[in-house]
Length: 102
Image (cartoon, rainbow, N blue to C red; front, side):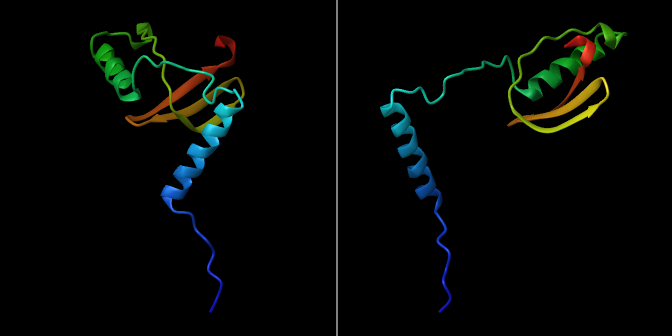
């Protein structure tokens, strides 16, 4: 009979992570040291921009400061500009960075 590799179940993985979290706390460490509060979800930011775009004749004048959080799923750099894809549970947005603006 061939050897079967042991595969952890989802519950075993969860218990392992909980035990690891407890060990971190027992050492006196803070497991999640940093917090970031986003102002809205990506879909909400996109909806707000689309509404502002419809309300103006010059999209270059739109200024909607937001604090977004998510997973960066792509990053491309092309000389003095870079692009990134940011995703959260509500959607995806493409970010644009210009070296002179950062």
